Length: 296
Image (cartoon, rainbow, N blue to C red; front, side):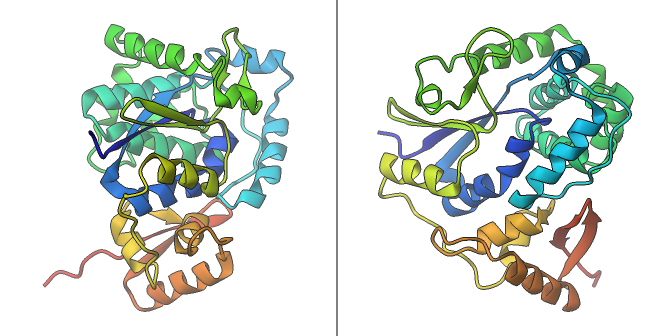
């Protein structure tokens, strides 16, 4: 019997619920490490911006919506964008990154999420997508963007979209955590399924870390669980591409206590003062990373 739990995240870089749920998912990464094998499935919320326009979305509505999501702690920069944009091109970029090199899809997805909510990025503008991808170390941004309409990418993207639209009759549907905006019953972001030895459980839509944790613990009560470190330094070393303040606060919370954002930020600033961490402004927050090693 396998001791590994397969975790599938159904998400989209444009969804503010998915973005706000990142700290809880980050906690799972830290606690269980390689005992969870993650897979990312792109929902593809919209193929064309006209779909959002028809639903009454506007750049101002998007900016005002960011204000309401601030309570969950992730960085935002609520400036109305030039226009409303669809999500398909960005989702295709994530899929193309996965096909180019397995694992890169997560780094691309992260970069697009952060940029979508803290910069004027339009998710359906290929040139702007390339600009964001150029910020991801070791990534061939031009190769990824050049493949957005590649038949292999299209096929893989459509498989993702179809899988995301298989939520009918699931626990997510029972909880009202599904949608039918384009026909089939689909998972809303950030839905997660956990599966081990044929048993599959579903955490539909936005959930607190407690919901994920109890599902994982029941699937295998003998998992090893990484304790909370005394300082954020090990967290920055584990996630060198950077953590937001809310992510660190969630990771520093013991058991499933409420995150103490102020205490986390104070501890991070102490690391910056000691020269072992850096703080880069990001929206109305910051991205914290380990300081570069000093040449010997």
